Length: 245
Image (cartoon, rainbow, N blue to C red):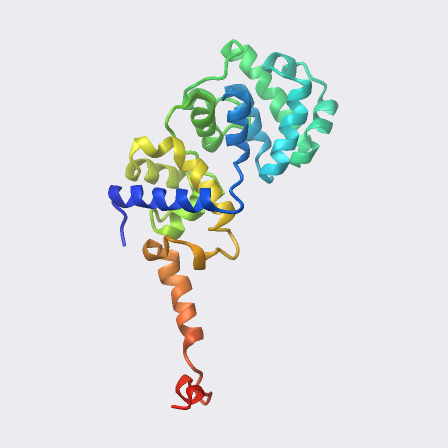
């Protein structure tokens, strides 16, 4: 089943209700950072780099430690690498990430006069910055419509049947064609929260999901499996016999 633009609106609405009604409706690390720091683009950029391959709660701890000591690109550009490693240790991969955020800070000072760029092409010139990170800076740092595609957005978009893609870059391209621009700013936050609480990578909670009726994954994978489980095995006791029928 394809999803038109009206379908997209309905999907986002239902997904949003499930997210915000969830008992585990925690904000994502970037949404928290945007709220706490007023959407400071530099802090969003560094926070996004630190968030790579780690959980949101670890990102939050690392960001708090780092910015309590180094509050700007200028300060971080001249930071001691060993101290930075210790500060961001909760985020994991701290050796690589320490080098990356110091290098990025220096690039911002040297190439962009200390200001984080607000265009994708310029952001992609920065070390360790790919399309997801660049789009996160646009959305959370500048309020510029874009669709950051992380593992949650990629997985959920394919499960629902919104796209049929193998790579996040392809997912971004397809979503920008299918999702009206007015929804781009909210899409990443809602999808990520939905992926954390309901449409999990392993053991998705399909039984409580209100999108089952339009979900390709449920229709083609989950529902057939449940149908097989419901059928009595040959030579077994049928439901009629159990009821005494």
